[in-house]
Amino acid sequence: MSMKKYAIIVAGGSGSRMGGKLPKQFMLLKNKPVIYYTLKTFLDSYADIEIILVLPADYIDTGQGIIDSYFAKKNIRIISGGETRFLSVKNGLTLVEQESVIFVHDGVRCLLSKDLIYRCYNKAIESGSAIPAIVSKDSIRLVTDNGNIPYDRNKVMLIQTPQTFHSKILLPAFQIDFKEKFTDEATVVEAFGIKVFMVDGEEKNIKITTPLDLLIAEKVVEDPGFNK
Image (cartoon, rainbow, N blue to C red; front, side):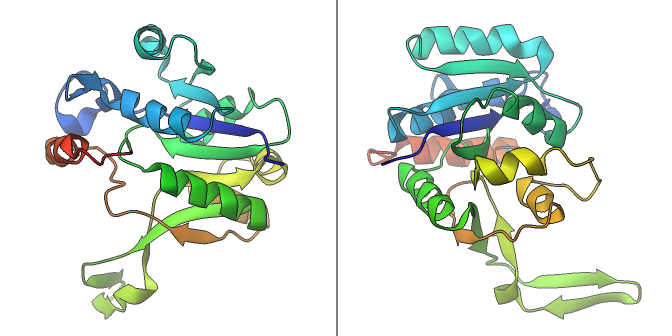
C-alpha cells in the first residue's frame, strides 16, 4: 500500500541574482513560468500527491494565476513563506494533515525527473529520508586559517532537492529552534538527532539562479524526451 504524499515546493526567492525584478520562479522558460515545470513533474509523478506551494506574500496572486491557468483541477494549496528557508518550510508543514512522505523541493529546480522523485520516495519509505546528491566534477580546495589546501573531490557530495522524509521525522524536527547552520532540511533533521541517507541526484537538476542557468534549462526542456 502506498503512503500519502505531500510536496512542499519552496519558491520564496526574490530573483536578485538574475538582475531583474521578477522572482526567478515566475520567469518564462519556453513561454511558461519556471514553476510550471516543477509543479507539473510532481503532479505527473503521483496521482494522489498534494502540492503545498510556498511563495513570497507579494506573489501569492501571481502563483494562484499560474495554478488557475495550468492546473485548475489539481490539489495545490499556497501559503506565504517566511524570512528564511527554514521558516518557509515550517509554514508549509502546517498544511500537512496526515502521516505521509514529504518532499521538500526548490521551486527553481524545474528540470528534475519523475525517476528522481520515485527514487526519493522509495528510499524515504525504506530509510526515513532521501537526500539527492551528486559527486563534484571540479577540483576542490578547502579554505583554512593558513590559506587553502586540496581536498579529495570524491569525498564531497553536492546536495540537491527534493529532500524527502517520513512525516514522523520531518514534522517534529521542525519544532526545534532555528540555527544559522540550517541550510536545508537535512541539517535540521540531523540537529534533531536523526541520520540522513543519500540517493543519486541528477546532473541536470540544477537550481536556476543566473541567466546562464535559464539558457541551459531551455535546451533541456526542448529535448523531446524531457520528463516523458
